[in-house]
Length: 353
Image 1: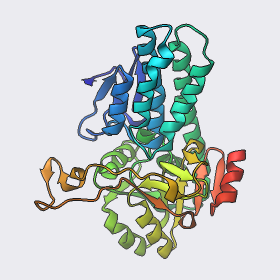
Image 2: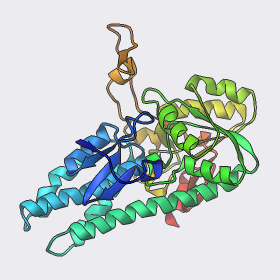
Image 3: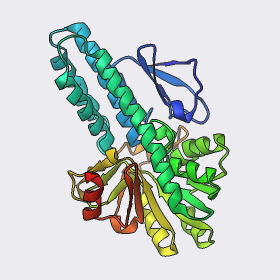
Image 4: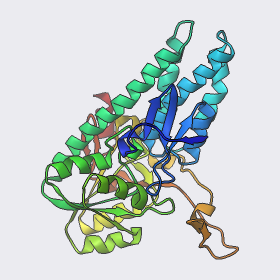
């Protein structure tokens, strides 16, 4: 993959760009030190970018996958105008395996495959590109609705804690958890945002703090282990996080450490808000225990900044996500509305609307 500079502003709302008939991703591995785009011209390259964490965050992964389907169809049609559907299948299969936990990846591929099945003979690129752009635009619109709905629930000015990055970088733009925080800050409801640093990829300190500081929203970074102490001192009204998949009963899969945070929040009387689009809700799995949890290379934990920090000969356990039981979630906020004290019945009612 070749790194290129584009004639656009490198900001969180332009982390995924279709330009010059190519897909460009803001390389999130390099932030905040470097703001560099990577050019993708194939579905395989997009799958690698997803697995290598160039792009991360469930909605952003889904949008990237939608554009990757366009690239797969282009390659198939160029190779054989009569066989392009068959030729793109291996690419889509590999794309679907790039990360196992975030449901938006599968959702976006299925949405695009539905378009593929209904297309007439001829070059499919224009129709598929239009569909990918609709998915991208719809995500941004959903995030703004989530922001508005979530901000109304905050009630009075307070400080909040967020974990990992559920901002514009993790979505098509504006963000889910950070969308709520942005909307609430505009309404005068946010004093400080405390961002967990989020080991081992430091999405909180690198990405969330970068987004919020550029927006002029007051943010402080803290280690995950500091959250209980911070809550005990008072002034924290909410924990606000995103999600990579929500089960039918309201269990929430999110970045590792979210479960810890929810347990501590319950003890201290701090409310927990999960902000996510309905595309993140997987009604095919009854509970969080049924969702596969991605395990990544132990070296991510054993190294930091290119230097080994783990003792020689010691291994590491590196799950990327954990499951927060629905009983620890005060409200799930989606573009369709908010579900307080979520359970299976309430989630089913939401998804019927």
